[in-house]
Image (tube, rainbow over all chains, first blue to last red; front, top):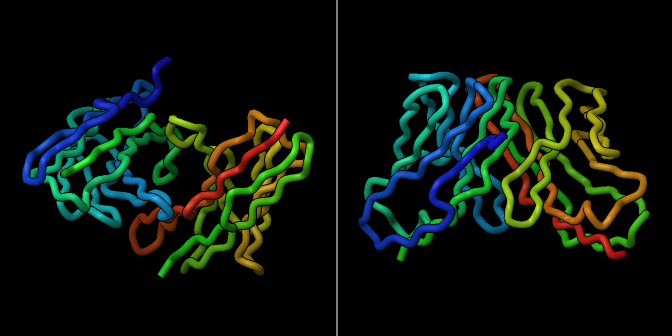
Length: 112
Length: 113
């Protein structure tokens, strides 16, 4: 039982490059989330998807786009990476709406 | 605006000691409250939750009570183990005026054998 799987685990980008972070869950959850975790700041919600085909902005959506491709997959795209987007990114899913429950192991992203 | 404040860490305890990690919140309406745990190199896991005032969430020996009068949701465990060493996050979700989730900065716990 894999739970929430994120790829890649680590990535280094140059400023201006683009990248898509992948997330898949195998628990048949409707709700999925993308967060970023920065030192001393806890987690901040980037985007939320209540179901396939729907997405909503969170606290810090600027510079990001998302796609809920199907019920299993929720991807996060950086179109033009900036050093301020250096962070650890977590994908999560849940059975109950708006209550993130299962998190992936994270993607550590560095932008030079 | 909404916020969650946790006690600063790290907290260092000996095995079998009593644990309290303080959490207070500021929010409009009636938020749901959560505790998450993050073990080294892993993502967060939901530890327990409470969705209304006076509810007590509990799991794996941990418990926390939703206190609206003091806007608090302190995490407690009667006897900690080395395996409880992790970072603990208090969080709230607010469902009025749009979905919002706010996490505290996290409290690192070290338990010595």
